[in-house]
Picture 1 (tube, one colour):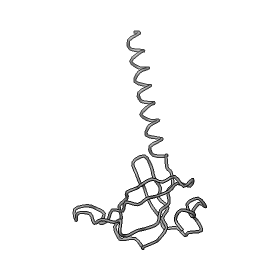
Picture 2 (cartoon, one colour):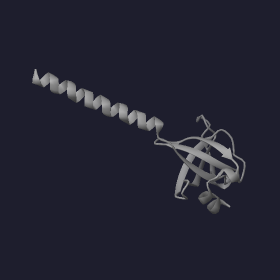
Picture 3 (spheres, rainbow, N blue to C red):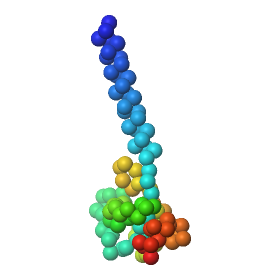
Length: 111
C-alpha cells in the first residue's frame, strides 16, 4: 500500500513538473529589436519551408546584445527595424516597427 501511494505521488510530481515546463515554454517570451542588414542573410536549401535565414545582432529593452537567427520566406527591407518575439525555442515571430516605437536604449544603439 505504501509503495502504491509513493508511486502515485511520484507520478503526480512528474506530471506537475512536465505541465509547469510546458506552460513556461509556451508563455515565456521576450522581445528583442534589430535593424535589417541584408549582408547578413543566407539562402536556405530549396527543400526548406523558408527561403532565407538572417543572423543579426539584436537588443532587449535594456540594450543587452544577443545574436539571433530567424528564417523568412522573403528578403526583408534593408535598414528596416524589427521587433523579434523570442521564446525558449528561438525567434517565434517578427514584425517591422518604426524607429519611434523602439525602446530608448535600443534607439541609441541602432540610430
